[in-house]
Length: 210
Image (cartoon, rainbow, N blue to C red; front, top):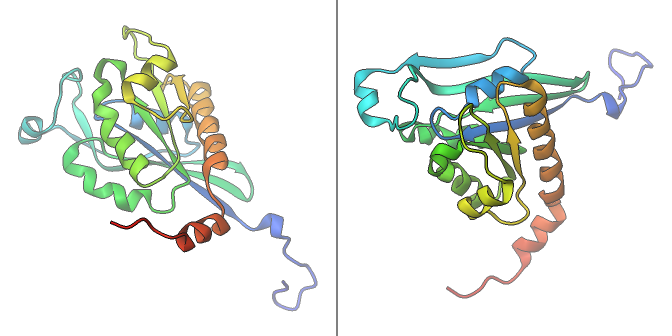
């Protein structure tokens, strides 16, 4: 392809590629911290102080000292190379903000679902959401100070995950640890995403009678 009469063609390898990754999980599990650890730019945060009415609605068990909450999203960026950029979107954790998940998940390659072993049930909603929509995800167990450590298989059993879903131990405060979780997600997504031909074949297949 040539622009402005120039003989210099644009190589397909230079066409910009963007990858959208979601960071999900329960309230206070470390999503904002993980985005901040990975992003190369100043993260966009929509945190607001917890109000008294909000505190009566949101579950604060185990995070009583938390004073702010994400009310829309967290956003960060990672440049892999000139034409490959990863955008990170942290989802709000409270149930009253779940209506935003559909918009945030549109076009996403996959998600890291953060889990806190002290409040493991808080990530059930995220796991169910991505399972039902066939969006690839991995579970990142955020290893909080003082929290009991569990093997990945134990967490998998507790969450009733399919055997093929990776469970990674991570520390949302440490960039190398977060990077490993991100790499695990991308590898998992590339293994599980179906080609357009596979989707077309599924659409043509006879559907079972109701």
